[in-house]
Length: 253
Ligand code: PGA
Image 1 (cartoon, rainbow, N blue to C red):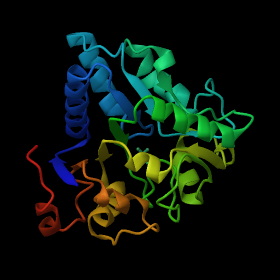
Image 2 (image 1 turned 180 degrees about the horizontal axis):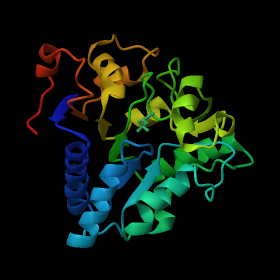
Image 3 (image 1 turned 90 degrees about the vertical axis):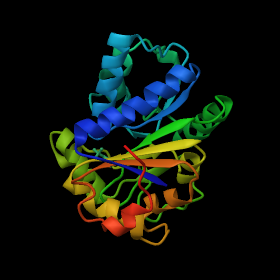
Image 4 (image 1 turned 30 degrees about the vertical axis):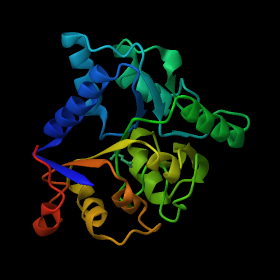
């Protein structure tokens, strides 16, 4: 695991975008793993801006999103398909048929999990996966206790996750209780992972990411076993992590 220490959200978003843009320029057939939430929206803004200014093309890029709520279809404003269309896909030249988000309205969610795994395999696997980190250490919707061997699966959301995400809904009651998510093993098969963290609400999970024993009770800890993870974290997210610990991971920004 390597760490790029940045000042703030803007710098985190810019650094992440630089990495993705260079990769896409060098690999027009890139397979990107994408995430939703507050963390990656700045990255997506930068990708859109660069696409407009410099014409970086996504015509042959494929994408797979990490997760989706069960029960929301792609037209629901809180669905992750809708989020991705709004925050990225509608503003770049990517072909919609090359963008995959799990179907939260599938009649057979188990089958949907298998279908997704197969599509990722057929695409040759994910080259760069963008990740956020939950306050309880979850990655995608893999909550504490999820087996490290999990593949794409259905999960019951932790109450803390529903609470955290209720800010996007009218009320907590409207937040779905289940979701469908890439598994930890699926995520770990990505060739490269970019984990982004900004703000003081991420200070505890980031401290634990660097210091907790690797255990299913803190899902993100498994990332320390991945050969190619870059964490991009800002000062607030790093404020509780011992500088002595960080030293060993630092990359020049
Ligand atoms: P956030 O979510 O980007 O909205 O903070 C991250 C996560 O819970 O994985």
